[in-house]
Image (cartoon, rainbow, N blue to C red; front, side):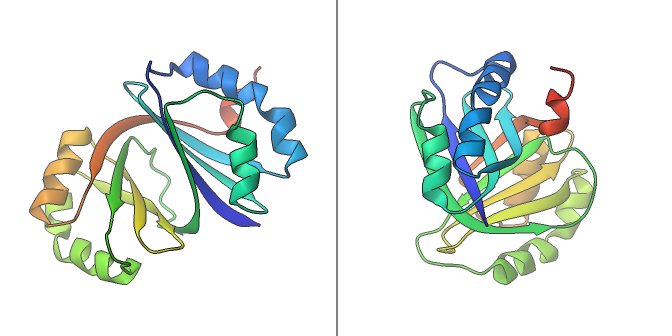
Length: 176
C-alpha cells in the first residue's frame, strides 16, 4: 500500500458539514477500491482540502474522489515524514519545486532557521513529500497562519501557499 495525497480546491467553499457528508458518502467507494482514509485538513475558509490515504495506487484514490465536485483535484504518491509530536495541526504550508529536491536539503534550511520558528511559536509536525521530489506539504501547529508565514520567510524556506486548517480523522465520525 502506498501513501497518497489528494489536494482539492472548492469554489464555492466546502463547509465542515459538507466535508462530513462527502466523507460519509465515500465509505462504500473506499472499501471497493481498498483505500484507507487517514486524515483530512480543510482550510478555514473552505477553499482547499488536503486528504491523506493509504491505497494500492494513485488511481484508486482518484476513483474514490471521482463522484465529488471540486474545481481542481490532484492526487500524488509520496512519503510521510513525521516528528511523532501530538500537537494538533492547524496550519498547512505548500511547497512546489521546478527541479527535484531532497527532504534533507530542506530540513537543513529549516534547522538553520529554527530560531525563527521558536520566535513565532511555530512547531513543525510532519511532511508529505511527493515521489517525484517536486511537491511538499508541511504541517504545523502555530498561533495562526501568519506566524508560520513570517517564520518561513525569515528562515528563507521556499513556499507556495500557507493556510489555516481544521483537521478530521476517523475519530471525528465515531458518533455518527
